[in-house]
Amino acid sequence: MRQRLTEMWYAPARPSLLQPLAWLYGAVVRARRALYGAGVLRRVPSAVATIVIGNLTVGGTGKTPLTLWLAAALGGRGLKVGILSRGYGGSARGVTRVAAGASWRTVGDEPLLLALRSGCATVVARDRAAGAAALAADGVDVILADDGLQHLRLARDCQLVVVDGRRGFGNGRLLPAGPLREPLAQLDRVDLVIVNGAAEHPSLAGLPATRTLAMQLTATQALALNGGGSRALAAFRGERVHAVAGIGNPARFFATLRAHGIEVLEHPFPDHHPLSLEDLAFGDAAPVLMTEKDAVKCTGFADARLWSVPVSASFSEADAQRLLHRVLASIESRKAA
Image (cartoon, rainbow, N blue to C red):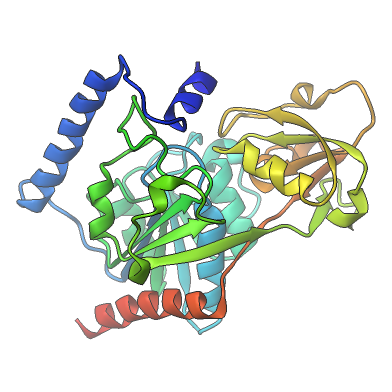
């Protein structure tokens, strides 16, 4: 069912029996925003600048690599960065700090990955306003709120939307008739739109050039999950591997591996799937290459077959400067207030 919906969402728009539900969903979304806009529902400001990194569509667009890029760039300028996440898939309740040795089953796979890769203070909270307050109390200078665009209760100083260049906004319809969490009009309210990869999809043609940046994701090596070191992806060229991806857009990961000349046997799983050793029993000794988000769930049973493939975001010099200028300006604006 999930695959059929995805195919429908990213195919040219056709009449759909789900459209009445999409109209109802859209009415609820607009009413909720109107209540916040009128002050009936109260936004809670954070004590420090808050940068929201989100998307308008269901599924993976590249928010996590962008969050890591920003954390490194801001940290390199002497700022103490905190990362805030809902902790989807984890069992944690209330406000939970992602400590060293935390379990992905408690805090969620993405927050654990963000904490491990960034080294930043990372907090999981379904009530993001409470999570932001905890990070501010820890003395951070800026909060990066991962996937917080639709969490309207938390006030924000800057909003960044990430969209996949190949998928775009799909058929342009709201859930469940399309992949949109919110109407495309929301783009008028965000600070920057970051397109992950070449902007191939027709729905991206109208994006405002003055507020649109291009991001690329690169992968160059694989890391052995059992601590056996690293191996350049180029070294897998011509080799047959099992590729595992429990992310919002598995096809992007498979394409990345094929771009290195690797023969890929695809094993897509639902986003945030709790991988087990049985899921990876493919009946042979071929290498198993997986995303970082999947890898954090496999360290407890890692063997010599299992490899993690980290990806990193990159920008042209001009776009990197535009992005940092906008984010730093929002931080300075908050300090001056």
